[in-house]
Image (cartoon, rainbow, N blue to C red):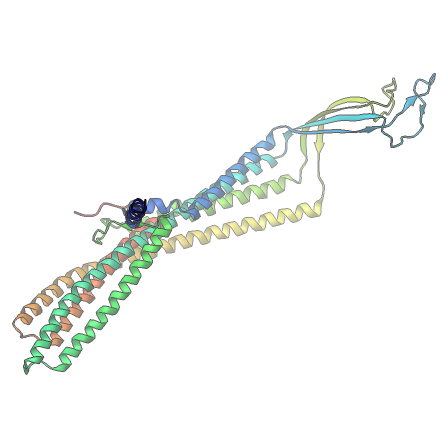
Length: 454
């Protein structure tokens, strides 16, 4: 029994370890997939839920065109009221109603109102709700685009930090070898090497260690951000080399013009102005009456009350009535109505000002992203050429180090130049890719990425 229990515990522990290992295995995502998942982030869904609520408001506004019914029913105690004989129920006993329970008193009242003409009130309400719906739909698209762009930023940041770390790992390994060789030469008492040479390499090694720490921190921070955005604690990148996206930039004016129509914030501001214009029109229409048809009826019965045999008798306990009429309803409150109209005009002016601000902000976002992409591409070209020279410099230093004819300063200078220019190359690639994606976000186009060059 004890042996069986032991084997059971071992098997359970093994299953747990395997399950934990499988769970800890990173889930590799492409950049496109990460962007797609981030667009379904709770913040993006919350904006979409607001648009759904605005859609319900449109249906509510449209419902004002249809008849509106009011139904009231009641039940309560009935007093005892009887007609005096030989008076044709012109006299009753008792003479006044008293609160007594002699039966059941109940009834139903119903009224139906059908609007015929409201001078534009209903249509204005529908237009305002429709503009609000379009505004919230545009804002929901913008929120989803923002989440996708942030996921792309984190994704590219992971790849950038990892490549920097790999570069520093390679440099540290080579510098370790150079430091070891220099120490051996010092021990042999060679005159062309000094303690200062070793200290220079050790100082450079300390800089590499510090940069490695920064790269690890950047990678972890970007990875945590990606996992939060896509909602997956095991999410990670494919680990492919960081490369510039393949996209030929057009003229800046082309992107500015496209942003005026496609940028979500601009579309939201345009729809907001439409809604405010409709609200202003509705306030104007409220200065005029409403025309409609009203119909209704009521029926009441009281068990303890006699029913007088006359249509002219006012009997609140036993009666049946019905009516229908063409009605004109007019609410007249000049001070309040004029104030509401003035407020609607002020809100409309504010909305138009915000539309101009949104267009200017869109132009700035486009031009900023365009400039960053253009300049990052230039830095990319310069760094590519510089890295080629730096590689040759490092290769020549390594060859000289193999035969012992290189100084520590020359070695440190060569590696420092290579690390600097390679870092510039990776950083420029990251900035170029991110600027292109930011530009697509600014003009309101999909973040679907162009294919990378082969």
